[in-house]
Structure formats: C-alpha cells, structure tokens
Length: 254
Image (cartoon, rainbow, N blue to C red; front, top):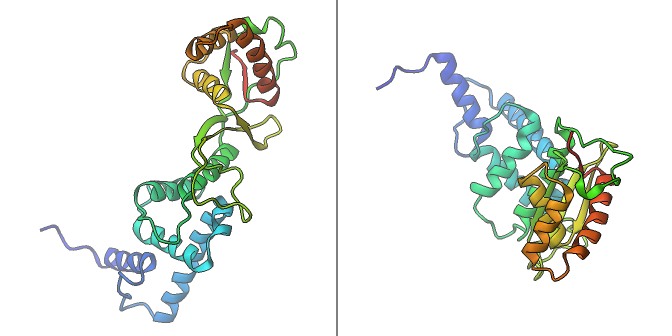
C-alpha cells in the first residue's frame, strides 16, 4: 500500500471531491457547512458561466433544470486535461461526444450544435491569420498555387446547425447533409458560408493537399465527378475560387 496522504492533501482532496460532486462526495468535517455551500455555488456558477458563454444557442434551447443538470454532470464526471479557461469549451465538447449518456430531454442535434458553436469559438481565438488579399489574384488564376485559410474549416453536418434556434428545432435530420465553411475573415469576424457538396469537396482537397495550382484542384474535381465537360468545371470553379479568396477563405501560397 502507498503512503497515506499528508493532512493538507487529504483536506484538499475531500474539499475538491465535494465541490465537484456534492451528492457523491461527503461534506468535509472540518469546513463549516455554510462556508462549503458558498464555495459550491461560487465554483459551479463560474463553470456554468464559462460553458454558457461558449454554447449560448444550446443553453437557450434547454430548460433551466435540464441545463443545470447537464453542467453538474460535466462538472462531476469529466477530468479536464488543461488548466486554461479558454479551453473549457473544448473539454465540454469532449464530454458530450465520449462521456455523456443520452438523456430523454437532450435535443437530437445536441452533439452537432455543440460542435458548431465550439468551432465558432475556436476560430475566434485562434492565433493564425487569414491569407492576405492579393489585388492581382485573378491574373492567371488557374496557374496560381493556393491554400485553404488556417482559420477556415469545411464542415459537414446531418442537421442544419446554422439554422437551429428557438424557432427551428428539428426532431430528425433532413435527407441532405449541410455543408458549411466556417471562417474568420480579414476583419477578424467569424462567418459561415453554406456551400454545396462539390464546393465542400474542393475545400477538402485544399485542406488535404495545399499548394497546388487552381487548375489541378478543378481538374481533379472534374475527374471525380466524371464531368463530361472539364472546361465548364474550370470556368465555374475559377469564379468560385475568386469569390472565396475575396472573403478570406483561401489565398495564394507565399
């Protein structure tokens, strides 16, 4: 057996256990109950505030009791791998994806909506910057080597997460997935674009194989689609690439 904990560590452990899970961790005998109640409320309210600020839509769609129960379960069960407050939202997402047991009151889209809200937060605080705007980007565009912005993420969801709110809470996903690109623009604002599956595939290719000329990506896409007229793909694809560059979703390789 290991050595017994020093008295101060025993007290710290009992204190933390009760703060995290008042029902599962007994009240420390050497801390007045009134003071312990104040600590419980202070710590929990701080945690609830951090999570609510990262997932405002999800909170707005859940009843007060269900929301509090969700945060208490996260607080009691999840062991954060980071001490940074800014990363609590990601820890909450990990909890939802791998630890939470689906509850009767949970919206069917809870995981996808939470992921979408986390993406917005992650892009807002990311240290990377969108690519510069090139005034002559469209000059010989098809030969230009390009890359996806490091703060632009192509995403696919079963639910239309960008539409979910008090007036739209679907019980089942639509037949067609939603394809989005969420990005931080050059004005430092997080925005999203709803794109079709072909445009999403183009952005996937950019993410996986950066630095190729525009022509390479568009011909590769035409081949995947078995398009009968690759020149048409080049024409429409070049126009799309120019628009995405203007918005800061992609840029020329340095």
